[in-house]
Amino acid sequence: MNYQQTIEYLYAQLPMFSKVGHAAYKEDLHNTNELCAFLDNPQSKFKTVHIAGTNGKGSTSHILAAMLQQAGYKTGLYTSPHLKDFRERIKINGEMVSENFVTDFVKRTQMISDQISPSFFELTVAMAFEWFAEQQVDIAIIETGLGGRLDSTNIINPILSVITNIGYDHINILGNTLQQIAAEKAGIIKSNVPVVIGEYLDETKQIFIQKATECNAPIYFAQEKFEVSNVHYNMYDLRMDVEDTENKCKESFVLDLNGLYQIKNICTVLCAEGLLSKLGFLISNEAEKYALANVKKLTGFRGRWDVIEKNPAVILDVAHNEDGIRQVLNQIQNSKLNNPEIKYHFVIGMVKDKDINKVLSLLPVNASYYFTNAHIPRALSAADLQSAAVNYGLIGLVFDNVNEAISHAKSVANPADIIIVCGSVFLVAEVN
Image (cartoon, rainbow, N blue to C red; front, side, top):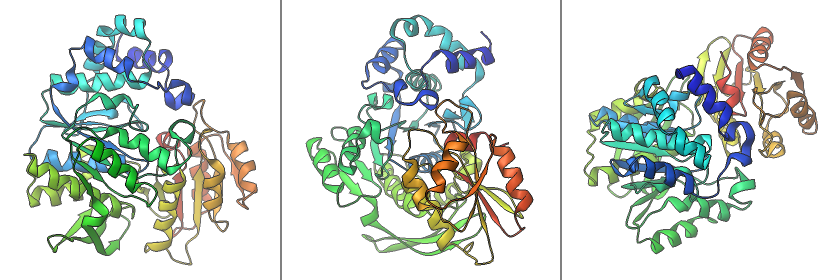
């Protein structure tokens, strides 16, 4: 098979969560362990940082990778899902895994794949570990796919674990209370491995403390260690002061990831950075500052309050659950964009297994809506989304294609208006 045939095989033959949802989720680590044993356990041949959380884990993973990369370390980065190219999932110093390796890996694992029938995610996790081991990375940032305890990535023994936050998502798999979801995410905490908790709630803090105590894992709460002030937002960057409350040291930072929700992620990242320095991964202040201001350039990260056009502004954000949508609305309400003259246009599409009603109940009735859908089996039809939205006073047109929806929104919007594309990673992925 050539590369294109290999990718088609992966999409067509292996159960893929983005397509079929829960049916692709394997509730144990057997297949991943079997694949990695077949490959001589590549995951044990390099150091890792393991990152979980309901929201923010993608941003945190990319920022940390950018810092380590800029500091001179050969840095692997495994994330999911991808937006445009499958190879976005597996990068070293911002460069995607080679097409030849992907093709060769699928051939080499064909026999064991036929025997154990791995999911798409299980095979790609093993692929990432093999690539990082072959390329002899100094360290790899590994983002969980779903949950933590039973996530395929959870066969690693990292030098640092990070849990960004806890919110309601994938409740059909992880549990329908914050405590249950937190317990699943806490499954990445390992024996004697320090863990950073980015943001906690009263309902979840004790769960993290209990798990860390059981594992004799030092635990650090980023929101207690750092305070952010003097936040200034514009369309292209985010500026803020961050104080280390223990050392009473304050620094100014500029981030090219300009969503206001990055305020929480920066505290998580800085806490993790401090622990990494104690573990031998030194990041100079110069490298730190440059990386924060150039995450997109260094890692190719996209889709987080991502401004792709102006006059009117078209902004892509992969927010797809209650917490994510709240952050988008916070951006609107508390940024300089919050101008009474500006009208907001939401191009929105969701998947069937999200809490659609919770998201719709949060959206403003005084905005314009363009309901659409990604072209995957999990997608909720635009017509069904429109029907559900009416119950919340949200009125809009239906489009079968996200690009048609954006085009129509641009045709009726004023130059100062804001068009926000959100609701699904897979919807953002189909934007031209």
